[in-house]
Length: 330
Ligand code: CP
Ligand code: NVA
Image (cartoon, rainbow, N blue to C red; front, side, top):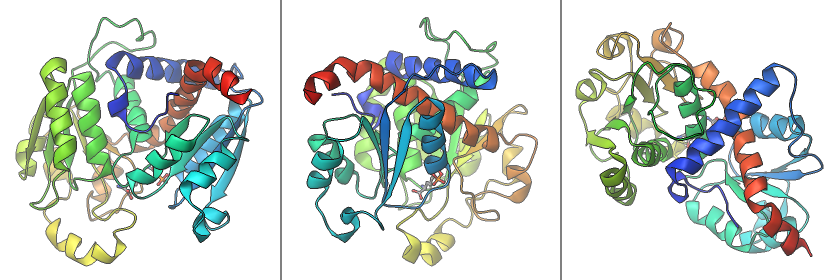
C-alpha cells in the first residue's frame, strides 16, 4: 500500500506526476469540467491539531472530485479519550477509502498507516508537512521558477524563468524539513537560516545531503539571513512557534527576533523573487505586513493551490493502490 507520509518516500518522477495531475485538475476546476475521479469514495479526516487550510482544502477537494469527506476532530472521536491509534486505524480504515491525518508526533501517523487498510495522507505532523510543499512547488511552477527536467509530466508548465534558489528563514521545523526533502529530491538550491539551537533535525539534513549527491541539489544551512536571501528567487518563512509549542512562545520570540522577513531583507533577493508562507502568518514576527501584502507575495495563490495539489495526491493514491485496495476489501 502506498501512503503519502513524507516526500522522502517518493521519487522525483512520482512527485512530478502528482503535480502534473494537480495542474490538470486545477485547469479542469477553473473551466468547470472537473472529472469526478473519486466518485463514491469516502475520505476520513482526523484532526488532532487546528486547521483552516488543510481542513477546507481536503473537504472541498473530495466533494469536488465526486466523493465525500468526514471530519473527525479528536475532540469528538474516542481517539481523543485515549483509544489507541492502532484500534482507530483498523476500525475506520475498514469503512473508508482514504484517510488524512493531522497529528503531533510523526510516529503516530506511522502507527496509523501500519494498521490501515487504505492509503493515509499526512496533513501535518511535528516533523513534516508534505502536502504543503506540493502546493508551494506548484505555485513556483506557475511563476516559472522550477527545475527543468526531461520528464513527460510537465504538460502544463509555463515558460521557465529560472531554476529555484530558495531561502527558508526561521525555525528548523516541519516546514523546513519538508523543504529539505523537496530540494533534495528535485535537485534545487535551498539555503536555510535559523537561530542557533533551532536548526532542522540532523537525520532530515542527512537524508537531504545524501540525496543531493544524485539530484544535484545544493543545500546550505547557517544562521545568517542575509547570506541565505542574497540572490534567492523564492523567499519563505514560517511561524516561530508551531502548534504544540505555545509554552515556548516567549523564549522563541527572543531567539528569533532578528529573523523577520521585512522589505529590507526582501531587497537582498532577486528583483523578481517571490515570497511564500504556508500560513497562518504572524505579522511583525516572522514576516512584516509590507512583505506579506506586497507585490512579491504569492501566499494566497499558494494557499489556494492546497486544494488542487491535494486532489492530485488523492487521485494518484487511488490509482496507484486501486487494485490492491479491491483485493484487501474482499
Ligand atoms: N498551512 C496550513 O497547513 O494551514 P492550516 O494549519 O490552516 O491547515
Ligand atoms: N510549522 C507550523 C505550520 C502550520 C501550518 C505548525 O506546525 O504549526
